[in-house]
Amino acid sequence: MVDGKLSNIPTEQLLKQIPSTSIKSIELITNPSAKYNPEGMSGIINIILYKNVNIGFNGNINLGLSYQLEPKFNSSIDMNYRNGKLNFYGSYGNNISDNRNTGLLNQTETDISQTFNFLDDRNSHLFKAGIDIYINDKKENASQQYNVNYKLEFDKEGHNIELEVDHNIFDNDLETLNSFTGFSARPNFDEYTIVARNRTTVNLDYTNPLSETAKLELGLQVRLFDNKIDYNSDARVINQLENYIPTSTVFDYERNIYSAYATYGKKLDKWSYKIGLRAETVIVDALAIDMDLTDNTTTNLPFKNDYFQVYPSAFVTYSPSEKNSYQFSYSRRVDRPGVGQVNPIPEFNTPLISQFGNPELQPQFTNSVEVNYTRNLEKGSITTGVFYRLIEDEINQGVFVDRSDFGSGRVILTNDNFDTTSAYGVELSSSYRPTKWWSLNTSFDLYARKQTGFAESLDPTIPNPIESDIEINKVEVDNLIYNFRIFNNFKVTKDLSLSAFAMYRGKDTGLNFEMDPMYFVNLGMRYSFLEDNRATFSLNFNNVFDTQEIYIVSERPFKQNVQFKPEFSTIFAGLSYRFGGGKYKAKSRKRRDNDEKSCSGFM
Image (spheres, one colour):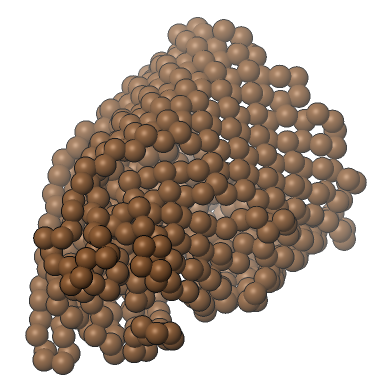
């Protein structure tokens, strides 16, 4: 989320358009209560941006340029004009970049290899505008573009009812130019994709502090989501869902969710607890229409998935002193398939490997239990905890033999539901300031995971293989995974600060892949100048030692290894300038959580 709002813009693209100087804070809730949407196995990330509402005309300008192999430019401007009870505000941001990704795939048993060279030429623009209207102490009525919020405060402090309606529109045009060289080169072809996406959310929230120690929360929510994709190609592209040859596809995916929740919380001296229940009805309708333009044959692939689920939650906290706190929490959550995971149109299409979505993908459900302990120190804090998660119908990357050409060695990547997965482990995080000029944040997690599912295998040495040569085996994988991160900030002077970030991600073995460890170091500096430090210059160097890369080994359905190396080692320079001043603060915004599971693409 950004400012408590969901966005139709893909997460990676959205983050690239947000300058770091525009971020006020980041909220993390690992095990949210029933008041929040139950999506997300690990909880909520909410990025909160600064919003100027000072008297007069105020604003902020950001410019950024980064480079490794290709140039990348982003800029943004935020402005507002406040006069009395009216505040007009708006923002514009862009991301104009060329992004290079190279790779190598090698099938070891047949000694067939394929190189990749992807160039993503991206031009994206994000607009936002709105008005705040300050009426009186008891009523607030605010609106911004495609957003209406009405909050009624009753006489008792904290007793209120709030209605919010939010509408979000996203349109995108994509042209993909595919060219091939080599011994088994395919004919070159072009792909054209048009995306139209609409999301409407209606929330009605009621809060009643029954006493100084007890609070009741009730709410209703409606989420309407529609995604339409028109795809055309001048080549005869093979689609893995059926063995026909589409050159034009229309994919319409509609998902409507109707929810009701109730939570009750109470404080008892050093103890506090909160229990909740959320009920949801989900209606999913999808239709893929494929047409072969050579003979005008059409194939319809409808999909429907309606279900009802209940999501309980419970939290107990014990704080014997200001320095010590213990918490137990339980919640049931859901990961709904993302748009990219259900889209049957190819994400990329090459001779040995292609990736498609799966319209029949089902949601995965997670039961999560956590126990945490926090110790507040004189110069920081330490939090340690243990967790257990049971995941039903886990969404994961599936690798399948291309049925249209058994002997080609070509595999199809898609997302699929696997059997139950369990994971348990420990987490440790710390925030500490050893000196006035040095502060650091560290985190470490270690967990064991057991996955169960089915995987295909095919002996590539079989001459002229057929369907019956494909073996489907039940696979169990036990995995021990650990990760470590540390961020250091050094205050050299009042105006100059330096930073160093390091991360290590251990080996990760799944049902189809084994990913090698990944580690890297990023360095940065930040210098503020001019009156009141109105201007800021930033310089960052990522992957300083050139150690970050993606290396994957697969045993099924063929023995193969894949290496990808995007532009990890970028140098970034940014300049930010703010103008205006005043003391008025922004109206608070309702904060919601993420809506669906991200697309777990191969790259």
